[in-house]
Amino acid sequence: MIEVADLTKTYRMGDVLVHALNGVSVTIAEGEFIGITGASGSGKSTLLHMIGLLDLPTSGSVTISGEDVTSLSEYERTLFRLEWLGYVFQEYALMHDLTAFENVALPMMARGVPEDEIRDRVLHMLDQVGLRARADHLPKELSGGEQQRVAIARGLVNDPGILIADEPCANLDSENSKAVLDLFAEINRERGQTVLMVSHEEWHMPYFDRVIRLKDGKIVER
Image (cartoon, rainbow, N blue to C red; front, side, top):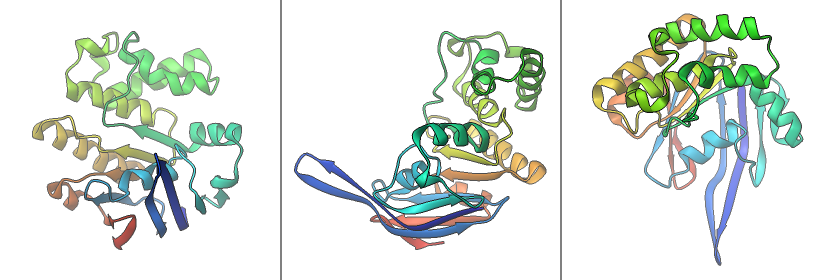
């Protein structure tokens, strides 16, 4: 489903060039639950952002379901993200002045989905993450674990082929972290969802079908 070929990413920080990725190649099959790990600065989040079309590589390519997404225009990448990719971020990235329902509805609104279909789908997704009763609550009225579950519902509401999760448990305690990982595992198992998750916690590793470990911008385990 995903083929990363000889991917490099170089950033300039003042007069210094930082090689975040250095010739990374890896293939990910449909339906895999993949953990991406490594020390701080190893390139794990950079790799996830390249696959998730949140940034462009310096060189190399990312192919998703036969489409070279690195060659798409900015507009085409936006459409591709809406159709193919769902996102869950470390900081939840919820709109603080919108309710849980409205936050989850945003990706469907961006696709121009009819209002009645949005309502049914959003309520279904909130039910899936155990928060239907909290649909009208603002983020500030929800716990950290509840906010992350809203973010997961938002990431899945368009039924994307790939769920991109960048350290989604980083701000959660162990109980809520386990709840999020159990939810990802259930989604992966029951829906065949391809899940790519960045983590640095060793106790998370047994959840994954496979671990991609990076060091100094290179893959050292796959």
